[in-house]
Length: 55
Image 1 (cartoon, rainbow, N blue to C red):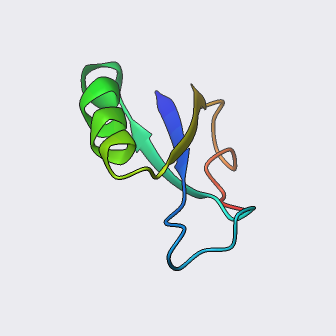
Image 2: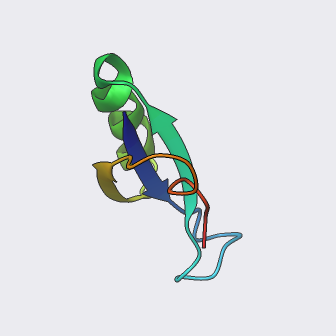
């Protein structure tokens, strides 16, 4: 499982992170979707409950 941390600079402050979780199969396509919009900030392994909490 992967945590894709992102923000929309038009509506979020620069330090704010939203988190979408993705399985191995969908990590790349979701990352591509966020990257195309300039939203993706980082991708990291999801460590378990509580790790998905956004800043």
